[in-house]
Length: 251
Image (cartoon, rainbow, N blue to C red; front, side):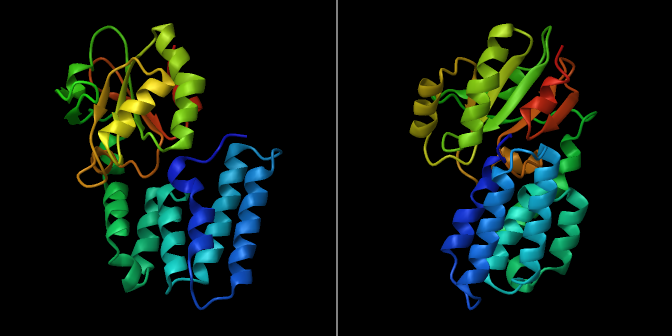
């Protein structure tokens, strides 16, 4: 069973830590149901995601006016809703949720998702080399005789590190694509640099800092890891949060 993407797996901690006027038993029920779905190895990834989506949507319906509902809403639009459903939920959300800064950024990402859809031309990403501090641009690595695989990741993200260990290291050795890491939502460049060393990353990495001004917004990335496969001519071939789906487009 594949693990949920990184922004999503924090749900149980968020919900458990929230305090509201609703009974603690209600929150415990949400947590228990979540754990049971994630632990059920008989479910396919699609079945697991469908059940988690239904669970979160049902729980959100009972917490639309409190902080628990805010956390649930963020989780829903981060990875369990398509863009159309996310926008509908946002339009119907309470003023408290709509005015939340995190929600506003997420919704901006939702609206931009189509700009980086397959068939579109990739957009420039600028940042620094974590090892040297020199300026780096994505355009420096796109082109040549093979596709480029852009990996949006963070040092603290468990599923990101798992994808690197289990897939990207081998893919890099295969020579089938040029991998470019984009370090996002980081606390410091030191964290990125250490993760690169720990994981054995030898491909170029563009460090883009924290959440403010992150290229994840222009690319419509709502959860990490996220992958964008770019043809040498600059056309986006595939994108998504699951590396297995991307690998299907690599010869």
